[in-house]
Length: 366
Image 1 (cartoon, rainbow, N blue to C red):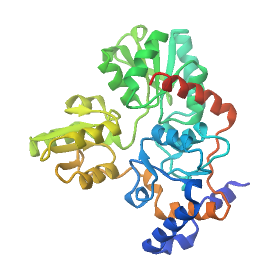
Image 2: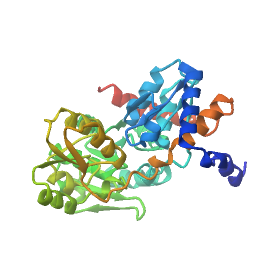
Image 3: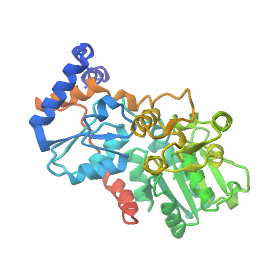
Image 4: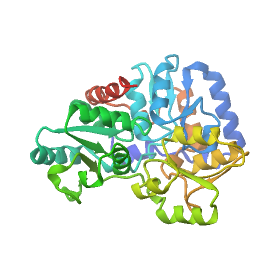
């Protein structure tokens, strides 16, 4: 199949673009009712409300992949998230289950910042520099190929919830840790564990060189030069502005934000942690939140007894997450109903095998 034919096959048919919202919503409900347990729709926290309203489960990427795997009655998992999340779901689900991504353009800029060719080249340089003293960890926000590489090198995946625990484990295995692909989560986690910034180096995969303020020989953490394009937009200036305009507000951010922003915030944690912290807070409290805008807006609507707003007033929703919309969801569901599967995500078994090793090492540690 040519690239043009492949692109045409995965492009939304024109008639979905002119359908009324009410008509699309009715059709989605009809298909869900008709298919029953054979269909499962997981929706990530960052998805639009027009999609989340139809989700059978809402959560973080790993949580949704695990729930999908446990839901053995579901033949079709229409994953409302981004590509790497659907890959993880395919790795964990059975061969009888088909994982479908409503829009193949829904990628992740962070995951795309580390490809397998760059990683293998960088690993060779690191081995020449440090010898067999490094164990790799990869954030769940990475491709299946990166997870496979990490698994085969004795490493594990991490989430923003368990990054500290997994980094502690990694240091019991080797003297040094390579943390892919998000430098900010790696830096914030290592710093909280007491690793000084001078003992951290950044690996620039484009220039194929280390960036380090201290002595390279003393480095304990090698951070891949990657970042989340959404969380990188929260700045020190945003924090200072909130402190000035809302001195009674608490600032809570995701650890994918920069070290400087996390250091100035009142609290930092995973998406789940942010949700639970705001939910448990006293009525009347004010929260400036440093994470994706769809979620912040949902928190604002959900917790009306508090004042919740974005740390960055000019923040936009995650562009790639937003590619999954109601027309694409309906298209995916109608093709499933017709027995014509589109946009199925399939991870080759050879890659899935190593990725499972990385995932299993993490899951074994709770």
